[in-house]
Image 1 (cartoon, each protein chain N blue to C red):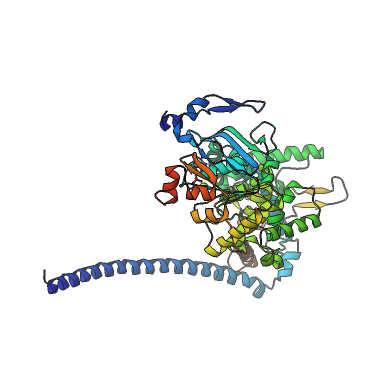
Image 2 (tube, chains in turn brown, red):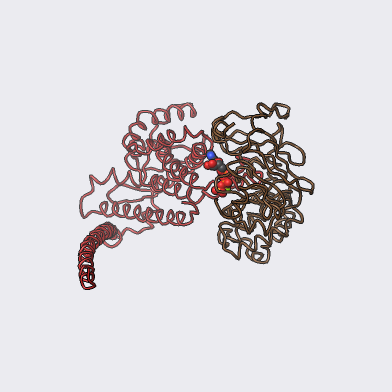
Amino acid sequence: MSQQNLSNNNTPLTTVSKDGAIKRVDEERLLTSAETVTKLRAPTAPLKIQTNNLNIYYGANHAIKNVSMPIPEKQVTALMGPSGCGKSTFLKSLNRMLDIIPDTHISGEVLFDNKNVYANGTDVVELRQRLGMVFQRPNPFPKSIFENVAYGLKIMGGFSRSEIADRVETSLRGAALWDEVQHRLNQSALGLSGGQQQRLCIARALAVAPEVLLMDEPASALDPIATLKIEDLIHELRQQYTIVIVTHNLQQATRVSQYTGFFLTGALIEFGPTADVFEHSMDERTYDFIMGRFG
Amino acid sequence: MSKAQIQQADSAARLAGSGKFSLKKIFDDSAAIYFTICALIVIATLLLVYINIGSQAYQTFTQWHISLGNLFTSNNWDAVNNFGLKANFSGTIMLVFLTVFISAPFSVGMAIFIAEISPNWLQAPMRGAVELFLGIPSVIFGLLGLIVVVPFVRNVMNSLAGAYLYNGYGIIAAIIIVTFMVLPTITTISIDTIRAVPREIREGSLALGATRWQTIRNAVLPAALPGIMTGVILGVTRALGETVAVAFVIGGAEQFPFTVNSVAPYIHFSNGSDVLTTLLLFNFKEATNNTPLYSVLYTISFMLLIISAIMIAISRYFASRRVYQ
Ligand SMILES: Nc1ncnc2c1ncn2[C@@H]1O[C@H](COP(=O)(O)OP(=O)(O)OP(=O)(O)O)[C@@H](O)[C@H]1O
Ligand SMILES: [Mg+2]
């Protein structure tokens, strides 16, 4: 079965029926495709998320191909691969941020705490609060620093003023930003440096007490020092949160992550503990990528 | 090729290059001179307008000894000896505030619908329709006002009053017409500023669990507010300066837009009033040089100039506060 056939086929290969059960339409066809078989070294840690046969289409563009990936709890999982291989798409599928893009089709499952987030009746609002997201370019709201962090809480409602103030402080401390901004909480967030803005966005996500942090190249727009601060912060956050981070920077992947998944043209080629993936790649393409031969 | 030959060729090339360069420089310089002249002409014209109108207006106070207080506190206008502008000034204020008060929320709502809620394929045609509205000449609005709005106001107000009291002309008809004229101004600018709010801002809000409506209300609109305010101020400027369309429906009578007394319904709208711009329009034909009327009309013009300059300054302020262009 050639890749051509797969990517030209824009009907989902599996469908989620009304009761949330996954109906496999043509599973065999995918599994025989060498391209979508993952060389997997299964993690020993308990899993927070597991995707099963996840396929994502933008219109006719098959962006994620049959990806089954475990994401261990309270570990940092790095996603790497060349540009356009589907890392961001995969990340956005986990908290259903793909829902807002028109003409996307998704099949397969994303199990979060063993529940399929694409099952009917999922509370997307709650889901997105439990899986916080940090974007590639810092995207603070044009509001005060305080209002940025309080945003999610005010959306949720039901917090008193003092509770909000407390949570804002805890979140800013959690994002290692408190010391720098405590005296100017009422100033515009847009006056912060890029690195501070990104930590503010992390604080903003932390404020709604998530369990998972999804980070899409959170340091790629930052200078080396700001990048180091973010990496230190990720080390800290791992004590409490499950982290999935997309990175273009191989050194960064080795510095911050315990597990690594390598994507190529929408397929998960290899997954395993970061040290193993980097030092004993099971797939030649992973090896080539790490050696800087492409991507 | 010998070294000398190479050097020769080199310097020849350099000469040729410098020749081209100086030609380009001449074009550059002449363009700079041209644009400078254009800018100077614009500035000079503006200065002349202000100086001319300002000096004519000044005579109201020096030659005719009419005080500003006189102009603003008196209700009495006969175009010969008495120049009380209170009624017209009140008319203008009422027109501007009510018009913008009604059209701003409506425009923003429409902009939100067009930019955020309507499906993609509908957005361009709807924005086009609003722009078409923007391009309608005010005389057409005036005619429509005369044919449609004045009878409408007459019927509604008379049936509310239960007696034939109103002819339909006056401030209400003017407000209705100008509201329709201000709507597209605020709407198009609001659409543009709402669209300029980057996708990342919406995504950031949605990723925190906000619904689409919460995102519009709490993230998109605050981010677009300075731009929307620019549109509102431009709406104010348009309402303030609108003359022709208003002239069709205002009735042209030097009386207060409404009177209040103890008889129900307490507020009685006048059959015909005037605003500053229409007062100018209706009186300039009769005004002869070297009369108090002439100077007073210039004073009104000067006031309109100053107020619109202030409005432009305010809108510049809001424009400078725009985060996303
Ligand atoms: N909104 C969209 N609509 C249509 N196609 C899209 C959209 N977003 C991404 N794609 C396509 O899906 C594929 C995967 O894109 P994705 O952004 O997930 O890649 P990526 O690995 O994150 O790349 P990068 O490293 O450059 O960020 C690409 O072919 C891309 O063109
Ligand atoms: Mg990406």
